[in-house]
Amino acid sequence: MLEALDYQYGETANGKGLKKLPSEYFDTNFRGCFWFEKRNICDTIRQLGVDNCLFQTDFPHPTCLYPMDDIAERLADFDEAERYKVMFGNAARVYSIDLPSE
Image 1 (cartoon, one colour):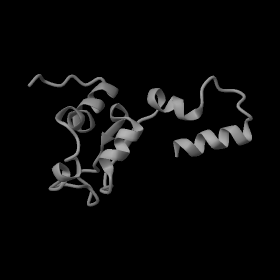
Image 2 (image 1 turned 30 degrees about the horizontal axis):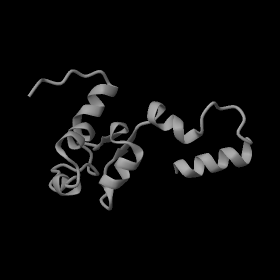
Image 3 (image 1 turned 60 degrees about the horizontal axis):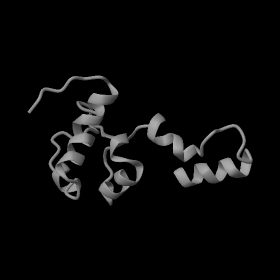
């Protein structure tokens, strides 16, 4: 997606109007989330930036993931700090929520 944005910007805007490529704005202006994705989710999150991705669920609606029995398996390639960010820390930072110390 980020590569496509850069390509289209170059094709349609001839590089005019932005100080950076569209993909370079992602880190500071966008957040992504994951929900049902399972394949290569850790790799995908790392490509987009661990600081920019948050876990989501739609509890209590029927499509939610409660009870969530496979999240540990899906995030097994993350270290503890990466898991914390996508499961709690990033949302707390984005929404200015104070989390209790461990």
